Structure formats: structure tokens, C-alpha cells
Image (tube, rainbow, N blue to C red; front, side, top):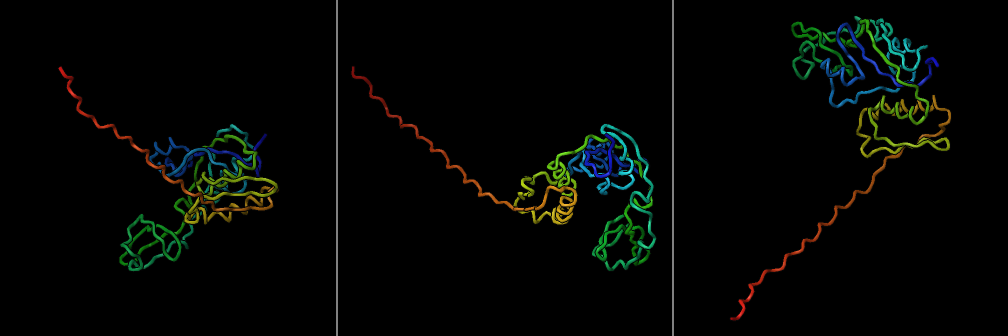
Length: 243
């Protein structure tokens, strides 16, 4: 059956700008292109088609395709990262920065992240556009499978948003109960995306009426007592037999 908007699917893809790979789900491609991140987990991602889990141009290319289809999509700027906005390029005094700004440096200023594109005298020119704004991109993709089970859909969303696979959960009697690992409150990515995850579960899974999140702490096991070491009996000198 053809892929439609609202379907959950597992997707592999590699995105390029010209000859340069900027994003991929393939460990092998990432290594070949010199962009491999040892901390990242590679492999197919679970997305909901039409929900902007990937850029719009790639989503549109998937609609109407079949599971197992492999293809290429050319994505213009307006369906990728937008046109380059000149008003998002501004200059700041170099004295405003903690370290001397250099061309290519990523910096945060006025609660926005940008890239230094020029330094003129005592002023630094910062571009707040996405690095790929104004670029036409190409994607090579493979549709691995449809994801039908709500549990697998939720698991895929957790992975997509937070990168975590250590969050256990159950769905029963209209309640989705999550058992959260200790110290998850210190995971910035989880804290940023938790609200989006909750909203999307309620929006797309009609059988879930309540979401419960529990942070679980288990009593640490006591170290085992060291095994007693038996001492060898002392050797005694044997008496010489009398002649």
C-alpha cells in the first residue's frame, strides 16, 4: 500500500549539498565522508510522514511511494531550510565577545546562534541563517517498512527527539506509563523535547488518554562479602624414626 500522510515509517536517507554530505543515517557513509560522530547512533529513523520530522521536500517525495522503494529527491530552498534572509545578517562590536571572533566561528549572541562570516576592523559580521539556507539539496532515501504498533511508534519518537533507548514504558487501559532513568532531568535534549513528545502521543494515538512519567530509583546492590580464605595448616617437622 502506498505511503500516505500520517503513516509511520522507518526511513534511511543521505542528504547532500553538491558533492558534500551534510546528514545521513548510514554509519558507513558518515565514515566515508569524514562526518562520523562516535557518539551518534546510526540506522533507520522512525518518522510520521507529514509531521515535519524531516524537511518538507523529502516528506513530499515519500508520499505515494511503497515500502522498499529507493529513490532520489531534489529539494529547493523553500522546501528545505528556507531562502537566505539578508536581514538575519548583522554586525556586532568584537568587544562584545569573550574571545576574539574569527571567520567560521559559531557563536551565540542575543540568545541566537550564528556563524561569523566576516571581521571588519572592530566589528564582526554574524549570519543567523541556517548554514544551508538558500541551497538546493538532494536526498537519497530508502523506505524500510511501515511502523504499525503504537509501542514501536512511541519508541521511534523517543529516539527521534531525544536519542535515548533506555526509557521503558507500557500502554494499558488508556494509560501510557513511562519509567524514566535516574538523573534524566539533567538531559537537556529530553527536557526540551518532552513536551513535544507528550503532545504528539495525544494527537496521534487516540487510545492513550493519560500519560504518567515516573523517575525510578533502584536500591543499589550491596557488594558481596569477600569469601573467607582458608589458611593452610602449618607444617610440622616429622620425627625421625628410631633405629
